[in-house]
Image 1 (spheres, rainbow, N blue to C red):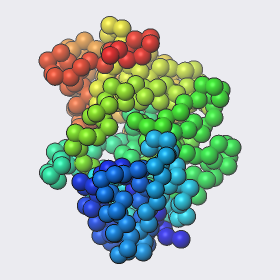
Image 2: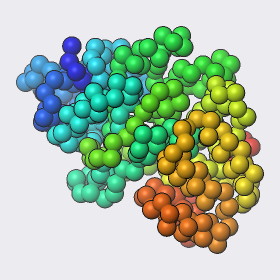
Image 3: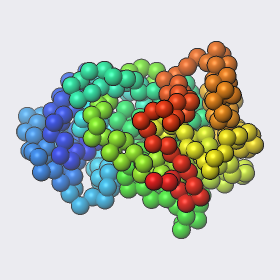
Image 4: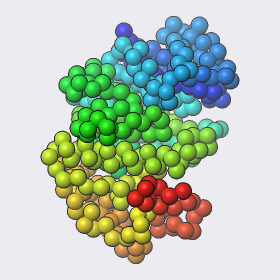
Length: 365
């Protein structure tokens, strides 16, 4: 049994696959096994991975061409894991050499942690840095933000396998990608997320159930090259992400015996806001949401900051939002995701970006 089992899904990803594989081979931490999950590639990706497996016995290749979406593929990978920690690696991203060593130390320092993520750089197809991964940090940053956005960067994450198994045993529902394993909602109303935002559904639920954290250190390079799902299926992904936010809020309210509050006006999936039926003042909704959030996250700087930022978003006229954001920034500083969220709203209509108009029937096309 290796300390880390690395799950690397691939489907026709040969353009960057060698670099991704090399970044695992180059880890300073040597006790790992890399499981390449081929999803029916026809471009030589499986053959390339097999060549690496011939040279390094720690690498294995398994084909699951009929797996249902990325969730199904990753669940096939979880079934193969026999390790302490499951590490995620995408076929177009790069792990920095110290990634495993740093994550292992974090897990060992706090046996309660179930998920450990990190920050990183965003790179283009040529490897040039074009941005930063901005995730909530601090001991309670993940839970404080989980209702509003993906709180952990999927390809930067590692999970404690035996903790996942214990959570599943406690609830009677296996911790799986794409499935509702909190089980608070009636079975007919539980979401299924085969793709598009399966990572958010997994990490959002785990954040509600157990300690999760992002380290304030860059450990990966996340590649943005125009073929990412967030670029090719943005509208559909935003709808799924919103469905998850609402499901998480409803599940949390049931578990904690609190009143449900709709997180939609305060979500910033993709660092954008939803325009909701022409409404511009969500002050009453903010108070209800703040009450719910205070039931979920421990008091402290992370909760205080999260509530302060969501208050900025509660009034959508440009002057009020800009003024509130200025006060917020002076007190808490500015993170890239926060700045881009507010900027996208203040400049809406002036940018080449379709509005996300939310109707009772979902996002308008």
